Length: 117
Image (tube, rainbow, N blue to C red):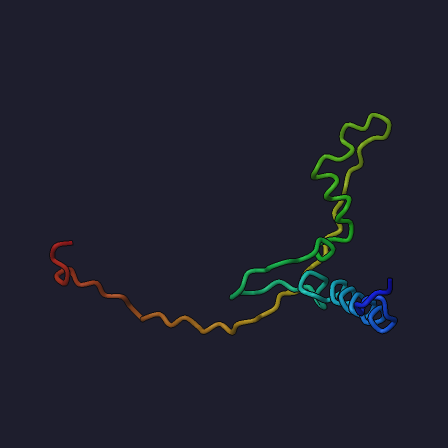
């Protein structure tokens, strides 16, 4: 008995493989919202920093994390290692221009304005 549906044709197979390739390219895009940014910066004021990868903060992030989590602390064969962090300095980015604060010259409080307080 032959198949009456369109699932076993060469054109349908090529279309499905093309769809899988496009989905894989979309899911593994390096600079997506879950991927790496072009440049890691910290905001000055206005927004909070969202996702920054651990590679942005130091060069030896794995050693620092192992020391903080206590990995290898009960190893009796090798001595535990001391980690000297090699930190990176992140640039700051201004997203919102700040308006200067205007203060009055002198604040006068008159005692007879609110008699019950």
